[in-house]
Image (cartoon, rainbow, N blue to C red; front, side, top):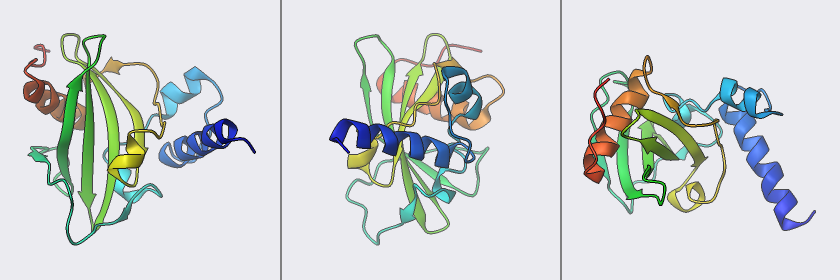
Length: 158
C-alpha cells in the first residue's frame, strides 16, 4: 500500500474511532459525526499520561467539563485569519491532542486533527466538517473563547 493511501486509510479509521464508530463516507456524514473533544481522552486516540509532559501548556478554564483538564499548547493565525490551535486533554490518567480551527469574528469552530501526541496531531486528519457555530456547545465555546483571547483576537459576542 503506498504511503498516501495508507495515510488516507489511517485518517478514515481515526475519524471513525473518534466519531462513535460510524465511518464517514461523505462530507455530510462527517459533519454529522463530528469529533467529540469532551470525550477525546476516552477514545483509542488517547495514551497513558506520561509522568513528565514536555510542553506544559496553559490551562483553559472549562467549567462545562469538570472531569478533564484542557491545555492550550500553541496557537497561530492562518492566512485566512482563523486561529489554528493545538490542545491537550487530560482525563483519568490519559492524554489526547487535538488541532482545531477557530473563526473568532464569526464564532465558528471545528477539529482538524486528533492524535496521541503533539507531533502526530500536527499531521493526522480527523476533520469534523466545515467551521460551524459554537452556539449550544459549551465546551467548544470555552475553548474558542480562550484560544481567541490568547491569539489577541477576542471571540465576537454571541
